[in-house]
Length: 150
Image (cartoon, rainbow, N blue to C red; front, side, top):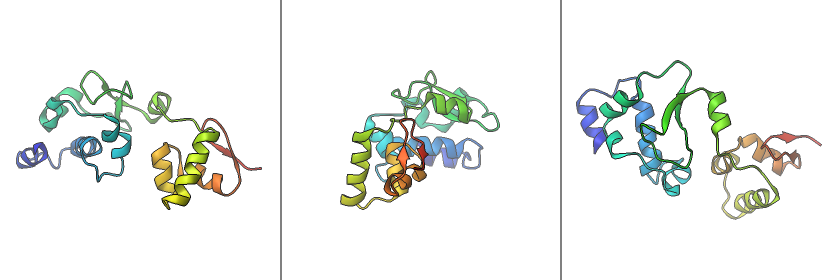
């Protein structure tokens, strides 16, 4: 596997190693907690980036406070579709599903039938776990994924 060859070449301690490894895992490893939002949805990593050397070359140094972002959230991890972005930019670019009555009902059903935690449900629906908690405590929620107390 690519990570093994990269480990042999001494990249494990490189500042971008963890970013690269997490990107690969969420797209290729069904045991990864984020796989359902990436690999299961068909999000892939281009073949070139299976080698950390190419990922580092293409992305360059990560600016402080920035993280890896896909410009088109439906697209693959490729040099043309990725950039370093601030949290604010990522939030604007997010494909966060907005809460609506149907989604809230799905959340409630999953909570009771699958016994999923608030955190797991939050990951699945890409909202903060406190929003999920508020739904079950009877607080109202807004279409933007935030809550307000009644």
